[in-house]
Length: 96
Image (tube, rainbow, N blue to C red):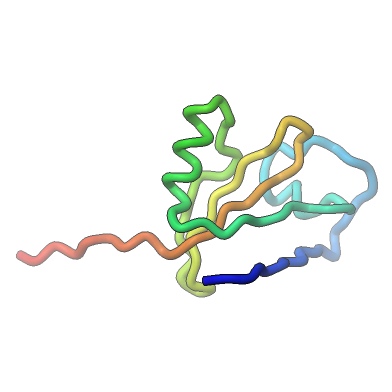
């Protein structure tokens, strides 16, 4: 794929200020730039590499089949939430 995609995320429960959110739901209720997203080939690999470099995962990678993506989140050194989005993780089905 080429090009880029911009997501704009909003909430009707916004509040002013720039608190350091402790979870993603809280981050969505903060006014200003809520987060930005990088599209990657493999979300788990991206998060693992960042973890190895000392960056902690903010929200563990998870599949969202309703929108067709797998996403995971970190926070940068200023508390900004950064999303990594990629293809759904295929789970091998077992046959008995």
